[in-house]
Image (tube, rainbow, N blue to C red; front, side, top):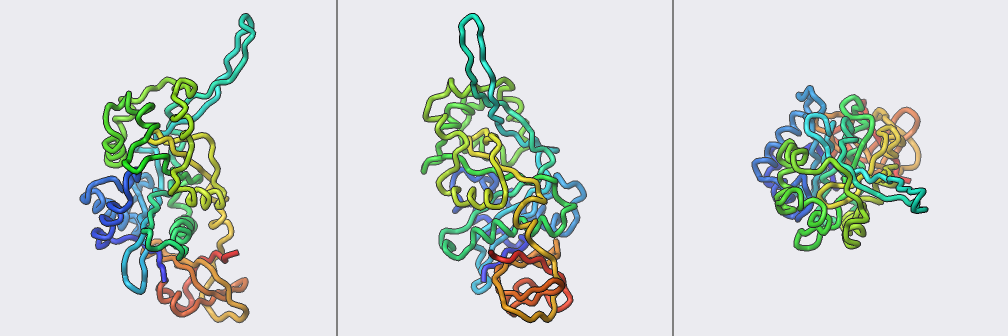
Length: 336
């Protein structure tokens, strides 16, 4: 069985291996082993309710094969972004250009540096090993984040944002970065990526322009990748759109990848999931995703359940994986 659970500091070796396997463009994983260890310690404190300021809390999740004990994927939920550390991106805006004398009237798109998602929660860092394809790992990893948010809404923002990977080639080069960001940063894509993941982003405020960058002045090759998802992230985008996330013309300042967002209470998994007490239930079993209703030691998995208006019964393996017994409350999302 595949199980999503709260990350532990003892996951450091597995976390480092996953970061190495993720390749270029994964900003949140493009950090040193020491920084990854710090992420795990922060996550433990967040799950245990030891971080008072929501903007400091990042909930790291691990995907574990319960049969082998191997960690085969990871994802994260940042409780509050853009508050202490600016969450910069480009907003594409349309400016009307008109001249009565010249008889011209047309619209021009331009990108402007903004911090519009301040206070939102962010889901991201989703990476699953190729060996897990076909097992529903990506979907479980993605939806478990919303089950976590639903477990305690007070810990998260009113809106949730997700940043999708932009177009980066096999060597880690970004045509968007080369023409848009590099002239201002004068550093490599990899270096800028790592600085963004490991600093307070003051360097972005110091170096990036505050004036609009007109898209018509950029080469066609650059315009063609703005707001476009990396081929490896197409399925992730489909899952986000299925949940209710929408693209509102925000793009990443490094690779031009799209940002999508949704009100937390309108996310499908949160909206459709129900909380029930474990007990005896008769009826036809159905397939569902189930999580225990505990922030500390959060666990989530797919399995077979029987459910009615007041109670839920789980198959034995699922109950063991979630570490729940009769009388405990669990959250369930029934697979349609």
